[in-house]
Length: 213
Picture 1: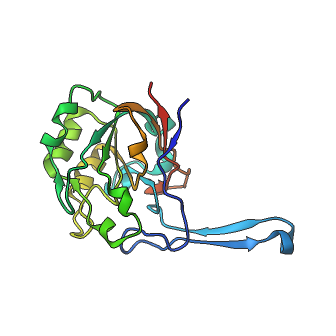
Picture 2: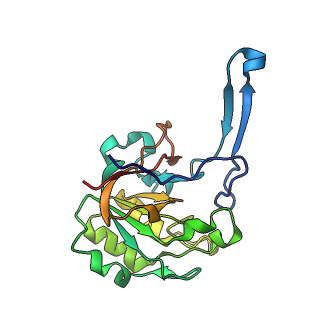
């Protein structure tokens, strides 16, 4: 099976969404002191490559530990939108050629190429989904949306219109993907398994491309 890691490494003081908790990773115990290594981890539920549970933006939405495992592993289509500029909307017309490939219940992954800016100021000024496109995603019956950018909404504007359209309908969102350029196929199998955190609105994931089904 062909495996490609689509996850950013969690590291101290890594770039996070503005206002989110910093990531801290430090030794709690060591081989010299206690005979074994134990690290203490501190991070937000949306640190690094992560998945949003519906409760993130929907008061009555499912929490991450309430979702069945089959919501996180499935077939998906990659849509290339690498011609977008900083802060530019991804529109419905940009994915129309893929409409015939998208099947209800499957994943839709947006490849913007913005992961090359991860950790830099430019990463904040990424392309994002238009409201019309978010509504179209609902019509297509997509169950999970992924993107290789900080958010599916514009980070610098502090607006969450696409989240607010998708989350109440239980569509999951994966953000901060990377390495999508290593995938040659337009369609394949993906895994976005989260930590099973009690009552949480999201979780970091080890995002993986599992190969062409």
